[in-house]
Amino acid sequence: MDLRRLSHVVALADTLHFARAAQAVHLSQPAFSRSIQAIEDDLGIRLFDRETGDVRPTPAGEFVIERARRLLFEARCLQRDVDLYRDSQLGDTAFGVGPLLTATLMPRALQELRQQHPQVALRMEVGNWVQLLESLRSENIEFFAADVRDMPKDAALDIQLIGGQPPHLYARAGHPLAGHTYTLLDVWEYGIAVPKLLSPSKVELAMLLGLPAGQEASIALECDNYGVLKTVALTTDTVLGATDAAVQDELEAGALVRLAVKGWLSPPSTTGIVRLHGRTASPAAQVAIAAIARAAQDINV
Image (cartoon, rainbow, N blue to C red; front, side):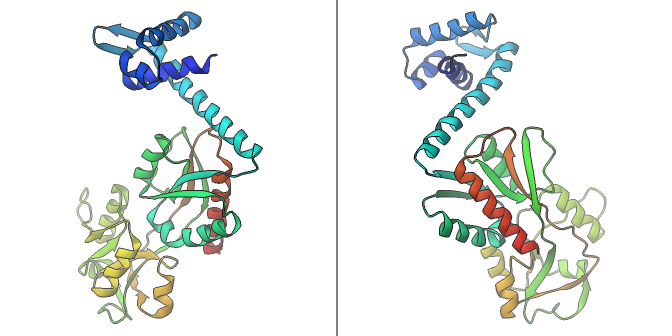
């Protein structure tokens, strides 16, 4: 199988235009057309329907294109890893992290990585799992670590579970709710600040609040930046939804206190490392994943 010709097939599938695809792979249009025709002849199937101004993959083409993408990706991984191992280097990696883990696991994991592997170049993208999954599928990142409770099952993904953190509600010292036990409805009147929640979590909150069926709970402040959330909780009566690890410094300093709330039974987060199924992690990604897993174990102990 000619990987160069397979790359031409993928280029045409991406652009659906012979001239633009030819330009993308630095070939003249006649040479590019001959390459597509040659691989179709070799395979004995038609990969693209060609009409005036319109190019579309055939069902057979869709079958070949999906597998061609995998082959080309693995070929790039192999070349990259061979180059890195040959030069005794770990290289670099790009990965994603959810907002909770950014505030809890990553300071510890990044400290370890920078101390033990200072030659590794890291690029960290922060977002919720929906955003990170899109980056993973487009191969902008190699993996991401996030709360995966609400992620749908997908055979195209490998998820390595590494622990979880129980969530609680926190308020500034001196808050009217501090030092007493209240219901979740009492707390809700002050407004709750949390990372961006997805529909299942809002439905769960609505049930705890006793809202009518099908109605979602209205969140006072949704933000994926825990620094911002903590600032709001420290300077207003807004209640913060977080974990002990996320607000450890503020708890130890007495600036924030954990509230006692009747009926607050939110399940722990489920921390997972998410990768595309069957994809080979780069050496740098492997050491980054190991560092994040160790940080999760330390926090969950």
